[in-house]
Structure formats: C-alpha cells, structure tokens
Image (cartoon, rainbow, N blue to C red; front, side):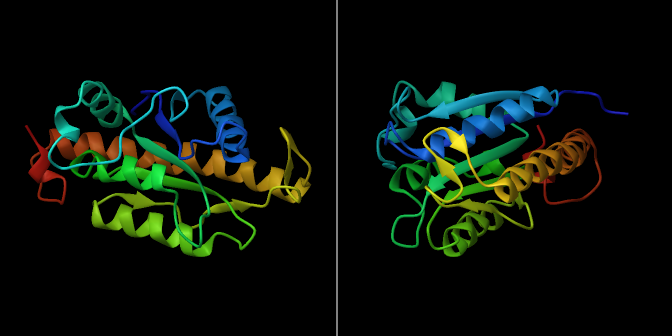
Length: 197
C-alpha cells in the first residue's frame, strides 16, 4: 500500500489582491492540509510570473524552481476568475509554461463566476486532456456576494461542495498518484511510459 502524502500545488490564478478566488483556494488548501496532504501555494501576488514567451520563459531565473514544484505535485488545484467566459491571463500563462509536467496528474478546478463558470471549467479540462492529465468530472464555481462575502463562505450548499471537492481530491488524487508512480517505475505499456527515465 502506498502511504506517501498527497502533494497538492494550489495555483491562485489572479493578480487581484482582494480576489475571492484567492480566499477560496486558500480555504480549500487548509482543508486539504487537515486531511493530511502536503500543500504548496503558487500565488501571483507573492511570485510574479512573466507572460509566457517560448524564447525567454524557460531561461528565466525563477523557472527551474517552479518547474520542480510542478514536477513534485500529484494534484493541481487551479483557481481562476471567469473573465468574459474564459480563464484569466494569469492562469493561462501559468499553464502555458508546462506540458509533460502535467501528464498523469489530477486537475481540480475552482472558478469565481456569476455565470456558473461552465466554459472556464471546460477550458481547464481541455488543457488537462491536451497535456495527458486527468480532471475531476466536475468543477466548483461560486459567485461573489452569493456564495462568498469578503472572507466568509455564506452559502451552506457551496460549503458542502467544497467539502466534497476536498474529499474527492484526496481519494481520487491519491489513487492516480499511486498509479502514476507505479507506471513511471514499471515496464508495462501505457501513456506514461514515454516519461520513464
């Protein structure tokens, strides 16, 4: 039985210092820590990441350390506001920096939206699929004012949905992480075979 702690990289995909996205991602991160996970937060406010540029991004001073953090993660908890039915530029830039590092890992998505965040969730699932990652079969969306006011969750249904997401990340993230490690160290055919060292 694999008992390694589940490693979560929580990405706050906004540069707005008063963002409810940051609060909700942080709230989920605390729940996951309580459940025994190791949680690493990547927040644009603390660690500005330049817009992705294929000519310069891989050589930028902070990239190797961030790449290692993504490599270590078993699950990517991705939080973004809904901007015109799409993910934020900050989230897109983060995702553009990586590809192979996402393979075989789980994406869990949180979207701040007054429009249910369906197109944004679908876009994050598309990135997961294109990068050979898994995604949760549902996303969590919430509306400022209705579900969250300031730094308070005011909707009981939303609170229960966050509990469900935290539980499911632990369960399914753990299963996928264990299988990913087995596939990377094994010899059987599979889509992760190309990443074996």
